[in-house]
Image 1: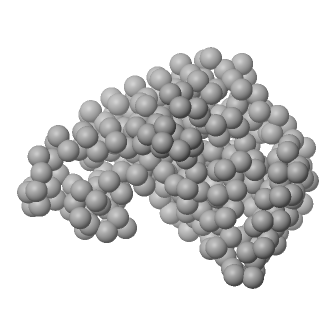
Image 2: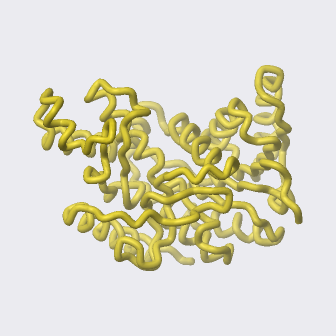
Image 3: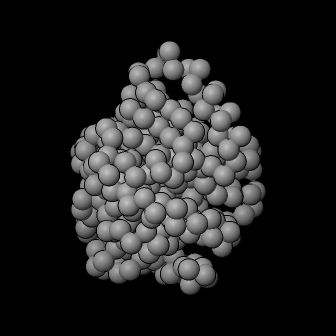
Length: 315
């Protein structure tokens, strides 16, 4: 079926899915948004509430959707799943959410979509790999939100530490969206100056120690937020909006999505996050950069962690 112009389908009417829609509505990126969830009354209520704000934003159609909406969609974002509880690791969520994702994929497959599919449900790397298997689509068409948010957290913390606008900090978190993630300091720069050189110029801190502390803060951010307020949704909603813009506007932006590696960074047959060029078809190309030896080792350890998680899933 021919796709409509900038149609987005969101599967999951929880706090992440609805916060994403709320953020997306204000950008004017989508011309049509359909929300799907097994809780139909929840969907109707969310759509009604969101619709009452339409006079204040660029024109867009929003509705309670069905899986038939996937057939002509440009983008399908899967946020459905049990949320992470206080003290629970992302990997502990796995089998319950894996079964849910398999069911969602079976419903999507019935409608032969050509949309880019973005997995958000945690553990996102493992479920992205599971979705690739069950959707039988090219690897670039099925991606995970990965460490787009983690990378934003790193940029924010560096911007606050260095007293620099966060938009002028360029930094990436690689690997698992989780405890084994890797801060790629060798790829981090401010004003085109590598971070280590910038820190020498700045001279306001003991930068090796502060780098370790900042990386730990990024890694533990979700745990702290969940402890404080129960769940995370604002940051991921905004990061999904950024990713959606790269896809819907065919931007060729570089974002750290979770994608299936086939030789890049010396890794094979595992989904994790690395910098990728994102266009209207998903991952156009993996940016296969050279990491420091320590970062490469960290990425390989992260891949092994994810392989162990994947082995636990009844696929």
